[in-house]
Image 1: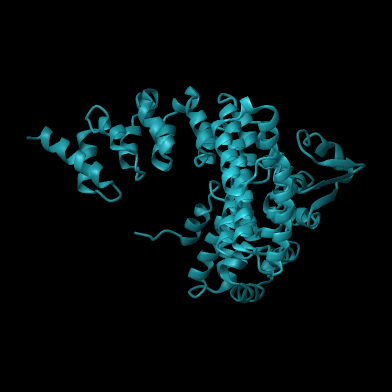
Image 2: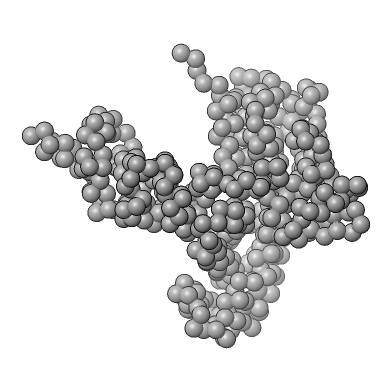
Length: 467
């Protein structure tokens, strides 16, 4: 029996449901694990050759180019406090429109930080900017100041989460294209929330603010990464890749804006042009805070693709600035450059579900769509993959999601899911009506990954049946 190709396994592990930061760390781990048994140039070329599909090559390249953004830049943007200002304005003029979570957060800010007016929000934001500069310079900032700083960041994060939940709950669950257009924005917002919460936790513990750096370089440590680059440089065919990586180390262009600009660059190149060519061209058009790209005679072709974006046009030159959401209209559902020849087709239910498997509010909206729940295997995929108790409970308590031929495997998937969904919701499925005795015996003979209480309930049922 042939052993599986480790390079193909690695390429397949670079997932569209994970961030480029996670994929970059995965890449660093793979390189470190194999560089002793395989010469670096051969290792790098084998990784590139294993990426047979265009999307696989793009994902690998953007993982190699991913930048862990400087904390200073992220915090500076967060300290504009757009969401907190909106909350306090809403409290002043539209108090009846506040959600329960907004009321809870408003009360928490009053008790924990003494913030009750919008003027106090603005003042504390200015103080936090001063604390940020002191921390970045290595100066001492008191525990209470760090705590207040963290409260501001976590509050902004919480309000941004609320906003994404509202968008998810109010999107038309029957409009696949609208959901697909919204996915990049939701992904960017989720990543921003995660980073803000991580920084806030570090501030409370007395940590410092980090600088921007290639994620793969950080994961491999700078010395190890330098040695890897030097060894890879002995192979001339790898020089264009190494040149682009070197340019990214200097420019440190955020990943999502680079992907968006790559969409524009791709339009300027002939079909079939290697991904490295148009990504390199996009990178050369970028600066630290924006981009400027000459289109020449292709301006009309590109202009028709700019609806709904923040890209500006001056003659034949495209230009724009980078922000967390300004260019998401130029990013595809799978967080790669848009392939416009494929963009006209409506995304399939499986494509949408796989992209939003970690976005609970949107996922539950999609499950309300009979086109989704009636597609064979879709709900079973969610029941197998999701670890959200809210999502799993919705499936276990909604008859239309666990019955019918399309969802015949859902009950078994719920029983095998390791998330601790209460037994109250699962006991009904330990019945030959939903799960065959052969499948139950299979669980008893191979209980790996099965919760102990589920295994015990199944054992009792089978023993009673054969008593």
